[in-house]
Length: 190
Image (cartoon, rainbow, N blue to C red; front, side, top):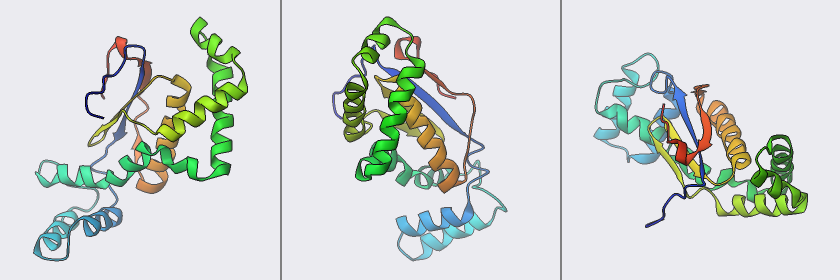
């Protein structure tokens, strides 16, 4: 929101889609163009540009940035709503359990062990709160994704969900070079 500041104790995850433009699926890109532009000369021109390349979206032309943004626009909204898992009780139960397990497996610092010591009910309420809040600090510029949150296990779950959706629904490949780190260590974009 307006005027929000990322706190120093927050954690970030940065990720990048490998060969984003060359691997865009033409059928999906055509659908995205049809969803965004009304039928007419411009839409037909955009389709011709897409079809002028055997695979992916053309790099080096101004329209490539447009393709890059509209291709994942609905993905952005889905991530911001935390993949709508709060609407499905089974998914919510599964990911709550995964969140608790993630805390148990990764708590290292005294602060993390203090949170863990509050028990599974506390962690379940904490996850529920995060899931319902959604992601207020999600940013994407074309193929680079950056998320700020105060909870490392939550970021690990977000990353896993992002990979599943990007691979399954967008036929994208994710760069293995990512980090979850404290924001005071600096933000790294691939």
